[in-house]
Image (cartoon, rainbow, N blue to C red; front, side, top):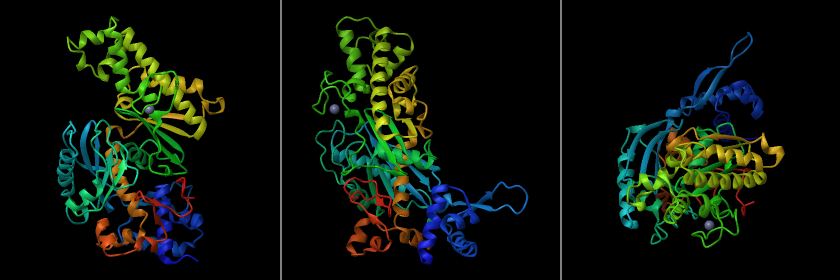
Amino acid sequence: MANRFENKVRILDTIRERRKVSRPLLAESLAINLPTISNLTKELLDEGLIHGDGFEKSEGGRRAELLTLNPSFATAVGLEMSLNGIRGIVADLGGRVLHRVEGPREIPRDADGAVKALLAVAEQLAAHGEGQRRPIGVGLSIAGLTGGGRVLREFPHREAWKDVPLADLVEQRLKLPALLENDVQAATLAERRHGSAREARNFLYLHIGHGIACGIVVDGRLYTGATGNAGEFGHTIVDPAGPICYCGNYGCLESLASPPALVDQTLQAIRKGVHSKVAEASGADLRAVDVEAVFRAAESGDRLAGNVVTKAGEYIGLGLANLANFFNPELIVFGGGVLIKAYGGFNETIERTFRSRVLPILQHQTRLTLSALGSDAAALGGSMMVFEDLFDRPQALFDLAHGKRPEARAARVARGGNREANDGRRKDRAGKAVRRGKRVHAGQA
Ligand SMILES: [Zn+2]
């Protein structure tokens, strides 16, 4: 027999998962009698964790009130750092963006400079709101390898950055709990909670920004792999005879179809004398050519750019078909700067190739859709990480309801508190919680 605390947690989990639930449905799905449900939901209402949101449709009779999480219960900072710059938001539990700060578009070459710029943006965001509306934590959504949970192991094209303890640095400066996650994995979480994948329990998030990566959700949980580095879709080998990749292998998607590869292929052809609008548009300086120029030329009918873009779309569609055959996702969400812009023909080429290459049974069962969150996905994912962590430590959640804000990790460790263990939920090394019976991390089963 579960106790009162555990039953309140189960009710919250159910409301969070189903978004809108009536009391009778809670009673039925949790096998708790209706008077007890009414009692416990009254406590949750008083604590400000949930609120009433409309009534069930019904044929005559009394209509049951629907309960949802109270979106205003808490706010959190989400910070994104990638090769496209630093930007951050404050979002509430309902995924609403309340405030934005745009940082520098150019990432400093040195790690110290980048950390300084990141902290400056973080400070502005953390100061947003008053009292209960102040952010309760910071989710860092960072490009690169974050395996290990609190330390940025590597950042793309910044070879000198090694093992930057980003989460600890942010905690020390802001005196707020901070979490670190790869940007694509964070964006995947945002799509799951508030984006195009709200109804999906098994889906893939295809991200093409500077590089190519993939987020994976299995049975409702973000799958991050044994060491936090799952989803390096860009290093899938699609042509063993292809060009060498920066990872040292031949024929990875990154080397054939990533934005830098499209630029390289176009410039190589121009230097060999192939005529192209890309060369005309760039003036005399071919170094100024970026992937946008290649896509625009392709859209305007340029033969070279068109061929380069089509070939890349075919490689990506092929790789995606392999992934779908393996994972059998119900949905694949297209996100990241390049896919969101939906350049003429590119996303269509990916989809056409995907459907012609995937197993026949999956051909029409797998939905492909564009991100509903656009360029906010990664930063919003940062905020969502803070809430995921909070819901995985229910005691901290109820403490917050009674005005006690979550402590930074260093303070919890220093106190020797082991409250997480008493919550009945365990935390894995990445600072993400692993729910009872819902573990999908390899190596932890
Ligand atoms: Zn590679």
